[in-house]
Image (cartoon, rainbow, N blue to C red; front, side):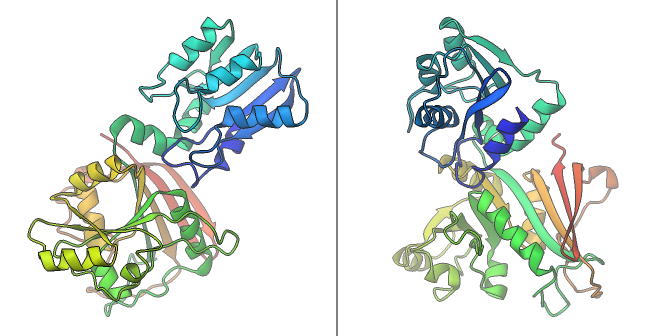
Length: 362
């Protein structure tokens, strides 16, 4: 099953809003065929494993299939994987996680049982099952809530500053950390920042990886109540190549809306961050990387809408009472109101330290 998980991970950043899935066909303890879900709309893991078997003349009759997620039993972009399993005369299927998608949700397992196939599901309380849920956290959250998984990312100095007192922030983190962030961007469906970041830095908010120049580009979102997004900004100038969505309030000037539409920038009216996430989920954006400043970060945290945090800590000290910090706003009055993190991982990235954690959900 761990081999299947490793296979599944290869689809990261390419299958959203579908899950990461890997499948192995095993006979007498040997892997005779394998496959994973490589790209949204393409063959699922099970069918890719059978294509691998068929291409090499491997007979799957009587073999065992290990698959990280319950096989689908409905028609979508691809036909049901349960049909392929039955057609290839698999004798036993070992499933990592059941699929909470209402179109599946145990129905795939039932169909396999009815076909006389032995089905075993990993113990949901096991450590391995917990690892598999974490691997597919984006999908599991999205399919059960209808809202995107929210990842907050920032880089700060060792004294907790995201820029100097003059606003200079290039560069706090090192080149290795910045490449790491591009890989993180690639893995998610959307990137979000506030209009303050756009006016200060004129960012592209895209994926730039030398080893993957054709990486899928996430949708770019800007919190911009009055639609001050400059028409000559990098975001607007590239909106025809990579989608841009400006999120505004009800009193945004109609002339600004029209001008952005003429530049192929989409506009969404959302009164709250929660409304934005609801709309994003409806548009099949299953995950958002928040790369805003302290005010935007505070807005998401105050509403309890952050699921995961990446904090890059650089070996620098800048000081200054007016130098901004990762989370601004009024702040909390009591420590027992603090956002609590768990599943802490500490990694060296170049000269920086990456702190990665999940937010404890109440």
